[in-house]
Amino acid sequence: MSRLFMFEKPLGMRDTLPELYETKNRIRAVIGNEMKKWGYQFIETPALEYYETVGAASAILDQQLFKLLDQEGHTLVLRPDMTSPIARVAASKLLKEDLPLRLAYSANVYRAQQREGGRPAEFEQIGVECIGDHTVSADGEGIALLIQSLQETGLEHFQLSVGHIGFVKEFFIDILGTEERVEALTTFLYEKNYVGYREHVRELPLSSIDKQRLIDFLSLRGGEEVLESALRLLENDKGKSALVELKQLWDILADYGQTGKRVKFDLTLVSHMSYYTGTLFEVYADQVGFAIASGGRYDQLLEKFGKDKDATGFAIRLDRLLEALGKIVTKEPVECILFSGERRKEAFHLAAEKRKDGIQVVLQDINGVKNLDACTELYEEVTMLVGKAGKETSQ
Image 1 (cartoon, rainbow, N blue to C red):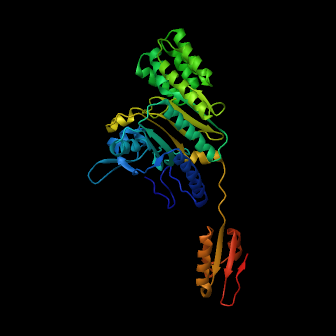
Image 2: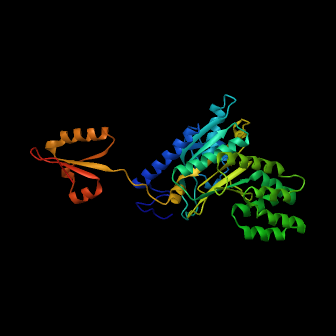
């Protein structure tokens, strides 16, 4: 094991410096306020969870979990996502009335990286979970809220793709026959390796008709017309119920005014999160190579915590959203009051008055400043209170 450098950080960890922190804070506040307007209540969960509960339910690969032992020998994990911890809280403490829960969160999650490759091991998610509502209306609400939240941040150029994991699985199992074959072919979709997908299909022991159905499946992207194309690929109505749900969802989003160029179907969409059971969606933005937000329906996750409740939700990756926005929010102006010992009390009083008016003020003993020119460049306004007989001056 090599010796660590003094300033070295664990693999995939990041420092957040003041300007970036301030930008994240503002974007977080904008999104959080929008979620509250839609009736979602924020909660917090602990960073550490038990491996046997939340860790096992999270659907994150075991090698990506940060594990440690407590004093009693139990294996703990740093939470790898927020959906599983919220499912635990909802099942144990909140699901007492037969009404849907609307919960929101903003928290860091942790996923270990074997090779960093620019991917963080700690990142912030802000999102919502609607628990206890089985209707397509709940899916539509989540997608509409996600779009509205992104628009409120100032993001203009993004695309939301909608799929259905139930449709993919039923369509594949009808043709391929076994879960193993389905999983092998689904992996190509998750990796978006469409060349590999086609080559794999050609090698399968299937009829030419079924091979063509699997190849035509890749073209199921676009507007409402995609559902008709998908319906023509089906046999024995396997997957039809999922298409009916997607048609209902499209109509709901149309009523929200969120169809058209912003929302498209992509029935090839799959997820590495194995707990999804129905509608899936991802958001991509210009100049960002990964999804900046994703979500979907997970109707069986709460069963792992003893509750039979349907649920849907989404998460926004704050770091990727900031990359998509492509700018650092301008800092609010800060004033500086430089004072000598003789006028210290006067400086404190002046600062207090300015702060009452909502102005950000820095107080600085002039004996601690070596370069006054640098000081005047740093702050919006500099007020100097020097000496008993000195005058208040601004630069």
